[in-house]
Amino acid sequence: AKEVGRSIFQFYNKNMQKLNASEMILENGLRKAIDQNELELYYQPQFNLDSNEVSSFEALLRWNHPTIGHISPAEFIPLAEDTGLILSIGEWVITTVCKKIKEWHKKGYKSVSVAVNLSAKQFQQSKLAEIIKTAIDSNQIDPKFLEFEITEGAIQDAEKALLTLTKLKEIGVQIAVDDFGTGYSSLSYLKRFPIDTLKIDQSFVKDVLTDNKDAAITTTIIHLAESLGLAVIAEGVEEQEQVEFFKSMNCHKAQGYFFSKPLPEKEIIEHYLTK
Ligand code: C2E
Ligand code: CA
Ligand code: CA
Ligand code: CA
Image (cartoon, rainbow, N blue to C red; front, side):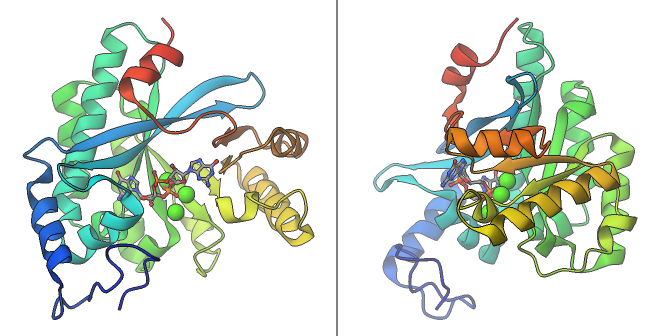
C-alpha cells in the first residue's frame, strides 16, 4: 500500500490491482474534475523580508469534490501522478495561471509573478516546454512573471533535466528548486543547471529556533544560495521569531501562515494586489 497517511487513499495500490470502491470513485471523479470546474487555484503570497512587500504568489491546487467536499492536493496529487491524470491537470494549472497573470496585469495590478508546482511526471513529459510556451504566447504575458517549482526528485535523469531546464530558460521563465535539501540528490546539479531560486523545505523551518541541526542546515542553504548567486526563500514560516531569524541570516524571502495562508483569488485581489 502506498504511504499517504491516514487518508481515504490509505489502501491505494500503485499498480491498480486492488482499487477499492472509494478509490475508483475518486479516480473517475478526478478524470471529470477539470471539465466540471471542480479544480480551483489558491494563491499564497511570498514576502520580501527587506521591504515587507508581496513579491509573488505560489499557486496551490484545490479540489472541491461535489460530495466529499474539499480534497487536499497532498491526497489527490499522488493519485493523479500514478494514473497519469497529472498531465492534463498540470496543463490546466499552467493555462489558468497564465490567464490570471494576464487578467491581473490588465486590471493594473503591478508586477505580479506566480509560481507553479510541477510534479516529476509533468517535468519529464516531452511536451512541457511547448505547453508552457503556448500558454504564455496565447495570453501574451511576459515570461519573467512565471516561475516553476520542481523538486530534486524530478531531476533524476540529469541530462534530460538539463535539456528541459535549458528550454524553459530559453522561454524566459524562472526556476525554483522546491523542498530543497530533502531529495537525497547530489549537489552537483546546482553547478550545471540554470536554476534561479532555492526553496528551503518547511521541515527545516519548523524547528529552526530550537533545533541546532535545523538551524545549521538552514543557514548552510542560505549561504550556498548566496555563494551561487541564487535567490532563496523559506517556506512554512509560522512565527515572528522565525521571520527575525531569516532576516538576520540574510534570507530575503519567506512564505507561510505567519504572513498568510493560501487564499482564493478573490481574497488575493482584496488584500494583496495593489494598483
Ligand atoms: P508544496 O509545493 O511544498 O507546498 C507547500 C504546502 O505547505 C502547501 O500545502 C501549503 O498550503 C502548505 N503551507 C504553506 N505555508 C505553510 C505553513 O506556514 N505551515 C504549514 N504547516 N504548511 C504551510 P498544500 O496546498 O496542501 O499542497 C501540498 C502539496 O501538493 C504541495 O507541496 C505540492 O507538492 C502539491 N501541489 C499543490 N498544488 C499543486 C499543483 O498545482 N501541481 C502539482 N504538481 N502539485 C501541487
Ligand atoms: Ca511548492
Ligand atoms: Ca515545498
Ligand atoms: Ca512538498
